[in-house]
Image (cartoon, rainbow, N blue to C red; front, side):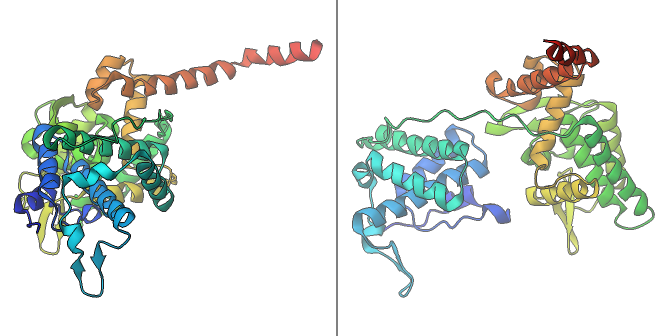
Length: 359
């Protein structure tokens, strides 16, 4: 019989509504795998939950495949005894065709993009490699090929669109002048300015503490718990200072830079709330809030820096916190595309059309 693992529950515990995950009685080897991800690979909580969710869904699906019965009886409210006795050897039954069927079904059910399917394959291969190394199981997933993902060019705001986005927040601040909620508008501007100027991920913006802000730079905790330094331009420094002047001092999480009010208390803002704020101002700026998002502001920041700031690829990689320069290279393709468009709009290009007519 499996026992509840309190440490596993703490690792997977999150206040985020979108990251809620049910930690049922899980086998010790799955608990150990999650702990290994947490300790050895410094993965974010979001990523660890994603791994855990996939493994549990995969296990339940394979149980149905091999035992031809559900893992849980909704009438009795009990787990099947065979499901509760699953050990690591259970996974040796899985063949390539089972994995392909599982992924195909998942892709159809969730309308997954190719990049998401590739992520799921990597996660399964990681789990099987762990079982092979620590429990000496036969790894039938090892030779499953990972398809090459198509590189889509990042979606981003133009310089004019980015300016209009900041302008609508300024208008919001002006409209709330003298009110108790003005600080929220000033906070919103600071968040959007930092997203547009520092190329931050949403989780990175949320995790910033007041002590992370120095005179002309901030220290950000990025993917894999890696710290990086991002320098601040004048607009960003001004926005931070403006916000700190009006930020409520009686916050529950007094360390957090960005806070939100919940009834009578203040606490660190959630990633979902940041997303809602960005969507709100995108709509007010008459920008497509279905096409653009918080992460697209990160793309915008990187693209504008590369196009207008003469930033070399290596520096951009460090600002973005990319482990590989290949990830950053996509912004050079955006620039090349714009260069091509610029050349084609040269008024002298009309001579080509005239020459064509003369032939």
